[in-house]
Length: 291
Ligand code: UTP
Image 1 (cartoon, protein in one colour):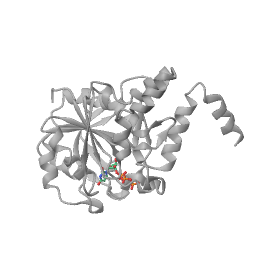
Image 2 (cartoon, helix red, strand yellow):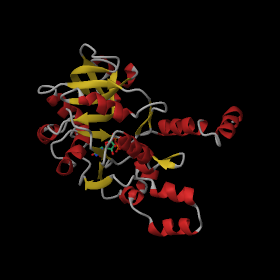
Image 3 (cartoon, protein in one colour):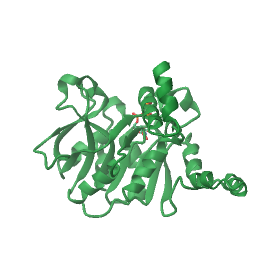
Image 4 (spheres, protein in one colour):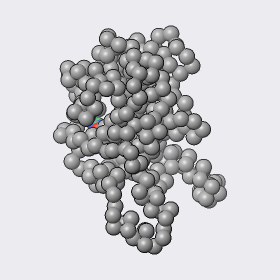
């Protein structure tokens, strides 16, 4: 893969059942971590990686995501007339001007693999990124996780999949990879991949997390993928198919991941950022000491 990563797909059509009842009306990706919705952190990371086309795979309940990235003329006019320039810049800055957002509907929640397949007409056959916004990854002192992976993809031919060491008793929550001889401190070729194995069947403790760089070839494999674990069309199964044709690397990114797909992870991410905010930190520390 030698081209720059231009397109990134955000599969955000899931039902978000772990945040019910909030997600009855609010898309999970719009839940805030401090003052920004989860999706904003992912979009910033994609733009940092060089993307100029963001493909959101949504369902018919998720208008809020499109509204969020759209212009808000009345609000902008009001902020401008009141001279609230800093707020205006924030409202206008959700998406840089050179980046376009494309919205595609997944008619039925048939699984992550199916959601990615829905983006095919926009992506075509070039390499692309996939980001799951509920994995919030912060690398405060360096490039974002997707940029690190895009750089690794320049020298790889197949795909690059983000992995992280997970506790043995948690393997049933992840796609788990087996790897060959490491290429460097971060990357190793994947030899095998299993979706949500029981601990005793897991080939390692390296769990796949929500960042992928994939070749366009994955779409053909997704077309042929039948429902797997949980009755859903799994991205992991298509990547396992890819491994028979091309190399894919497991990539241990630099940065800290918060699994904001569940309540504990969302609270942790919020606290982490609040403790790093000079205005909030003293009050948060005092609260944590006395609560
Ligand atoms: P999750 O497994 O986290 O499911 O999906 P979910 O529906 O978002 O949340 P819970 O488990 O019910 O609380 C992983 C990612 O795949 C997307 C989700 O939006 C999320 O980003 N997804 C999943 C789809 O876009 N379509 C699907 O059919 C399934």
